[in-house]
Structures are given as C-alpha cells and as structure tokens.
Image (cartoon, rainbow, N blue to C red; front, side, top):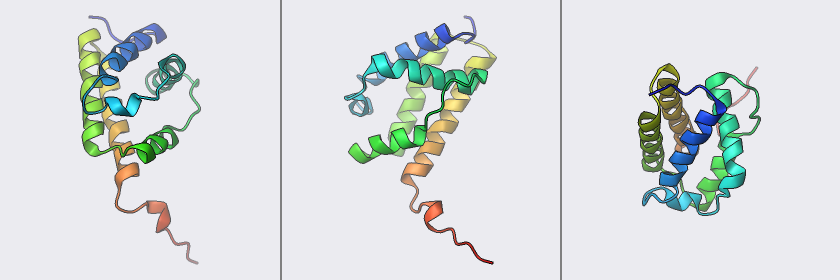
Length: 131
C-alpha cells in the first residue's frame, strides 16, 4: 500500500472514515446534523495542515467540538472510538511514515479535545495574575 501523499488521499481516507463513523452505534449520533458535503473540504484542509503543513485551515477545532459537546457530551469513550475507527481506516488504505503520523496526530487531537472538554476544572478559570 502507498502512503498518504496528496489531498486526494486525504479525501479518500476521510470519506471512508465518515462512512463508518456516521453509522457507528457509539459515536454516530454526534454526526446527525453534519453536512458532509460542506464538512469534508474543511476537514481535509485541517488534515493537510496537520500532515503536510499547508496553511489552508484557519478554524478552531475546540470551538466546533464545544458546540457538539453542549448538544450531547463527548466522553473519553467517544474519543477512543473515533481514534479506533480513524486508525482502522488509515491501516486499511495506507501504509508509511505519513500514515503513521496521521494515526499519532489523531490520538493527540482526541486526547487534547477530551482534556479540554472534560477536565474537572478549566485551567483559565483558575489562573491568577499576581505582581
């Protein structure tokens, strides 16, 4: 199998991911309102930035996930399932250094989002500026 090399590769990977994720019994409900036609180009831009350094994505993933979290809480289990499906789709379609980097980035992103959305205290709520 070839490595992830192009935007088209990312489009294929993410299309395959969403085919599973949107129907998944654990996380599918988070995608009910998703307009995949509009979302796919944005998420491909995000992954192009993450994996290839292309400055096409300027959004805020945390803000997007906060909105989802308010509708239906995103738990650690949900992030773990997202990571598992994503990793499986990478492994089914690609092999190589960038494919491995994509799986690692997904784990890091899932962990970071989970920490920010589910931490018992928000760090910025407790920062005090002292002289």
